[in-house]
Length: 477
Length: 158
Image (cartoon, rainbow over all chains, first blue to last red):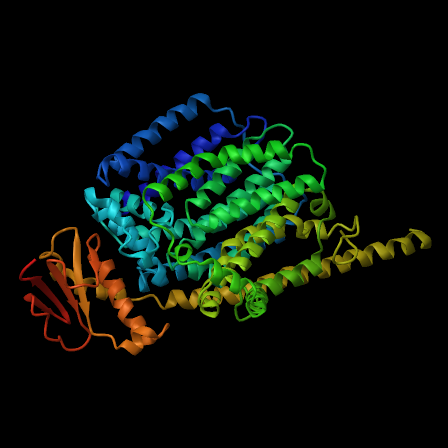
């Protein structure tokens, strides 16, 4: 069973990587570790979609793993015949870190990964069904689909609106896939999906920054994410927030690649659209994220007087359309109305919008939760990173020269503002909702925020070169 | 090396050592943060449970093992539980009401893909009680009492 479960992860990871290698522009060199990190995520997203179409056509039958593996074999043959991408053994480091620093960071990264993985497995063993929302929403949906046979549509029955049957299907469908591979229901299935996304996010962040900035910068970002207590703890809860964070991060990375190579290709823009589409297929928050990303691109394009932003937006839309159609199809054909939206009334919403107390309360909670995010016994991750940037400084060229930094940071601010308005206008029990969901919303953005942060903060090796004045942190650049 | 050349090098050396100090302090700060979390992860790893799936949800899941074999494999099944006082039902966030709801959710989770409705109208009705089993609806017949508060009823007349 363990081998079958491992295959349920390996098949989409390899297929996704091979497909990405086919799609990758031949003129852009890529290190294999970034291709694997992004490709595995895209593969998981595609496998989820494949499972849903398979269930639609044949039901949740045990033949699915053979069907999927046969398709993966075809992709492999195609990839080896058509492959043109040049793989490199290294990224594009912006400086030469000392070997002692790299050795130290590499060692810390390995030890932290081992410690976090040990804790993750220990917690999973203690609570294999995850948190309340996990078994009430995602676990129940997976069981309804897997056990339902011909009646799998009951998974979206309106008899249990409390289980949010309108929520998208990425997480439950991946759990069903794992069970189909294993041949039976096992608690290892959801645990494997959760672990793949939790540590896959760390790996993706590290690989992307190691490629786009420097190895030391990638390792620093990776160890901060591994050390964010809520990230690991929430990963074990089996909620969909960590998979969502993975696709937010993948979108951001593809947008950065798009900004770097926009003069030669629009393919990274299409990939960004696909990643945003998978975010929409993971949680409803993905819809707001996609809107925020589109607005961020428009804002960055207009403020830079850039002429190509229409093209970039079009590429994003092309990548997004397949998943958008799938989400719309799912909502129209299967999902009952959203329980929160269906109980809204215009009068009540306007009353809430006119209440200044609600704005103040949400603002206060935003400040409190953001400033204490990622806190452990030493302190909050936000304060640690603030002190870090004051010490090492910001790279002026990265901050001012990258259209992605402007687009990405605008999207994140807009997303937080969007959630702010949702809290103010829609929340019935506002204090309880803020308490239970604000940290999760921040967690969804945390890996992307770390990516942006370490993209613009100077790498240790850059900060040691006294060449230019930095924006923060005085001389020595 | 002449004196003026040495003098001109002093600011560069100072700037360099100041840069080193700042980078070392920054990396040290991050490593202290990482160390605090890693200590926490190691403590959690040490608390490795001797047996898997000994948690409350798994135990609750197993409560319904017996009843599953007597129920149709899918379709709507009724659900009754300990009566909830009107005050508790009306109070949002009341702990009794929340517990009542949680028991219902866990029963639905355990008995999926059957659809559990809080009603005694379906042909089969699950009783899920924390306290003593109350007298049943006159239209219901006890099929089997599985112990531990779980009872299966069947409606006498549709």
